[in-house]
Amino acid sequence: MSACPAFLCALAATLAGPALAATEPPVPIPIPREAALAAPPFDALVAPGEGGTPVMDRTLVLQNISNYFNSIRTMQGQFIQIGPNDERSEGTFYLSRPGKVRFRYQPPVRVEVVADGKSLSVEDKTAGTQDLYPLSKTPLKALLANHIDLTSSEIVGDIREDGDLISVQLAEPTFGDGRLTLIFDKATYELRQWVVTDARGLNTSVALFNVTTGQPIDPRIFRIYITGNAGRP
Image 1: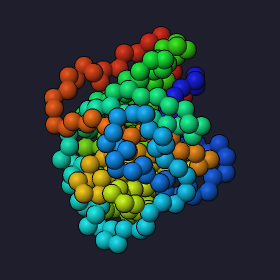
Image 2: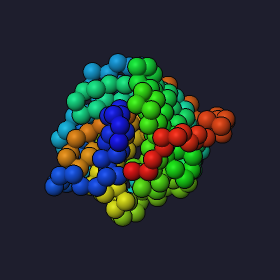
Image 3: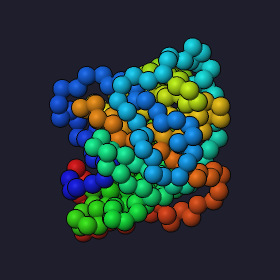
């Protein structure tokens, strides 16, 4: 695969399977709520290590998060991404459940990430490459599902609260040696951030801000255009 932003590299590492013998990664420490609501730049989005304390009423909290997240069909806004080596990029995103998302990175990053409901396309316009993945085999599967039931022990591993935020670590077998942690606002249950932890325990964080929900999104935004260099890793 060609060079890519940190989030995509972490995604690719998850798809590729075990590169190194991995230990169970800890739940990442979420960013403070006030930072999640602010515009970039952030000083730090995530730090390795165990953060917060276990949630006491696990089932109730997970049911509330599931109910809120299932009520959201469309979402759009801005994101800022920080990789394991502090590499930073930002852009806009559009999400329509089930199955559709587009990430548009700001220059100098020339990458388009699009999911159309079945496939995920990662197009690197600088390298002239395009990689296609089955959406069902990527960590984005959880974010884009038509219905999420986080109360299932087969889906959620650990859940912790830290100040105004709740971290929910997903543990579905389809994620291979990678892990996806979703971070929600404790009061509103809004999605604030997610963290991809690869097989080596390295974190790539994506935080959301200026988010609006429930607005119509042009379906053409999620159309994948296959180039001559498209491949399926």
